[in-house]
Amino acid sequence: LEFESGFTETHSAAIVFRRTTVPTTEGPYIIRGAFGAATRPVITFSHNGVGFQTTSAVVCLIFSDFDLENTNATKTASYGFNLGNYGSNAVEIHRCRIKSSTNKFYRGIHGGFNNVVVRECEIAYCANSGLFGVDANSSRSLILDNYIHHNGNHGIDGTTGSETIWYI
Image 1 (tube, helix red, strand yellow):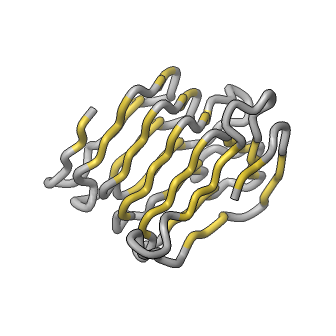
Image 2 (cartoon, rainbow, N blue to C red):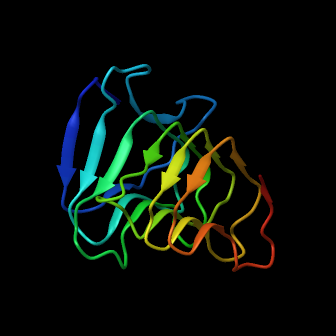
C-alpha cells in the first residue's frame, strides 16, 4: 500500500494488522508513503487510543515514509504504533515521523519489541515516551539512526522485562 505525495487521512479507531505472512513465499506487508514525496503523507488519528496495532500473529510488516499525528485533546492512552505486550515479530518502522508538538501521542511506539527495527525515524513531543518497551518479549531489536527528542518522560524507556536486548 503506497500513499501518494500530499495524501492525508483521519481515523477514529485503530488500524489493526491481524494476519501473518510467510516471508519466503508471500513477502512482507508494506505500508509506505511515496519515497521522496514533495509533501509527506500524514495519517491522523482522532481518538485517545492506538494508531497502528499489531497482534502476535503479525510477521513481516514494514511501515515507511509517512507522518503520524493525533488530534485528540486527551493524551493518556494514544500510541502511534502499538506492537502489543506479547511482542510482534519482524516489524520495521523506517523513516516515519511522529513529531507534531500540537497533534502528539502519549507514546510514539509502544509494546513488545521482538525482532523490531526502528530506523531513521523522528519521534518527538510524545507526552510520555518516544519508544516504550514492555515485558520480557522485548528482545533482539535494533534502534538505529533515529532523532528522538523533546518527549515528556523518556526518549527510550525499556524499564520492564528481564530479557530485553536492544541494540541502539
